[in-house]
Amino acid sequence: MLTDEQVRQFREDGYLVFAALIQGEQLAHYKQVFDELVAAGCKLTEQVPHWTLELDERGEPRAGLLHKIQGVCVVDARVLELAREPAILDRVAVLIGENIDVFGTKFFPKLPNGGTSTGWHQDSFYFGTDTDRIISCGIYLEDSDVENGCLRVVPGSHRMGEIVEHRRNPSRHGSWTKVDESQAVDVVIPAGTVVLFSANLLHGAYDNHSNRTRYSTAWHYMPEDLNPEKFLKGIYEDRHVACKH
Image 1 (cartoon, rainbow, N blue to C red):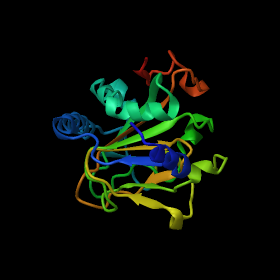
Image 2 (spheres, helix red, strand yellow; image 1 turned 90 degrees about the vertical axis):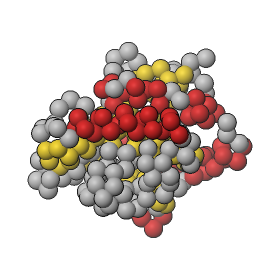
Image 3 (cartoon, rainbow, N blue to C red; image 1 turned 135 degrees about the vertical axis):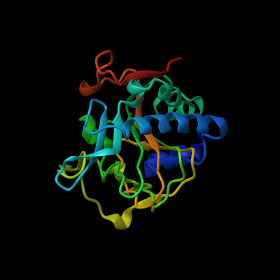
């Protein structure tokens, strides 16, 4: 499912973009699933397990403004079908082997006029590892551009050989780092696009300054035999079998 050139590009740049890989009725189905989750999230007035709201400048939750669902495949098992999509897994298998688990599933609705997802970071910072055997995956259910908060990457940054310092910002969820943005690439893509990237790659996203949503779901694939302490098989609830041969 990957050419030799694509494998070389992944090793060199740290990411691959598959434009509009998910299409038609399949894309519409998952868009409807996430619409339902957003409708439920917009009824929340406080943080609850798996669901987080956007924060104000004081770090207080903003009622009705859904930021993220962490463990979205635990909250709604229908999303796991997308994580097991053969068109995705066949490509991942070329990079890390055929027996694959998926973990750390999440959904970012990126609501209009201020919706956020992530600052600059390396996923491996959160995993406590620098292995090159974890592939992160972002799936963009809607057109994604600079105005509504597209993905940004620093090509080749996965080859730095280190996990850089990340610091928490009280007015934003998560811990983030700083990068030389002159090296960054904006990943402007159509709905249904799948992006595979190294968990060591520096990446982030713009905030949403448009009047449109920017739905994306993301997770991480790793070989079944890899067992990071924070994500132990059979203990961490958001680790699932994706593909087994």
